[in-house]
Image 1: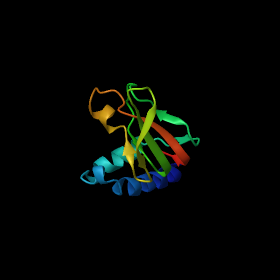
Image 2 (image 1 turned 90 degrees about the vertical axis):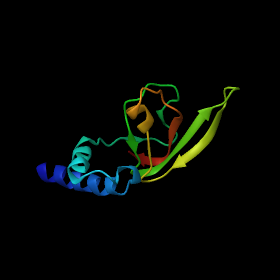
Image 3 (image 1 turned 135 degrees about the vertical axis):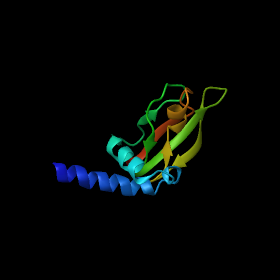
Image 4 (image 1 turned 120 degrees about the horizontal axis):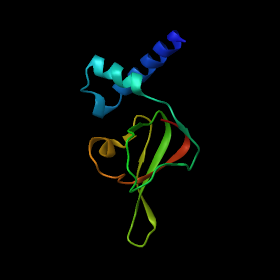
Length: 112
């Protein structure tokens, strides 16, 4: 089990190094973050986070794609962006007290 944990840590670290926002982290910070990562999978179309909700999780995309949308005045949702592997979201809620700025849904088989 220890070997599996080490292998996963290395895999996560390699992945984290590819994420631009994290490139300034030291080796120690990178490993600390790798240890804190928790993998989650979402079905196609599943809501990962809802606009207006409180957020405490920062998501990194390992596979698949995430579709971001915002509610407009008439109550309908408009797509505002798509994120692929190495993309991330949720950092605003993590760094500030702000609520979720958009609704994000999984598109394709997705691991975060």
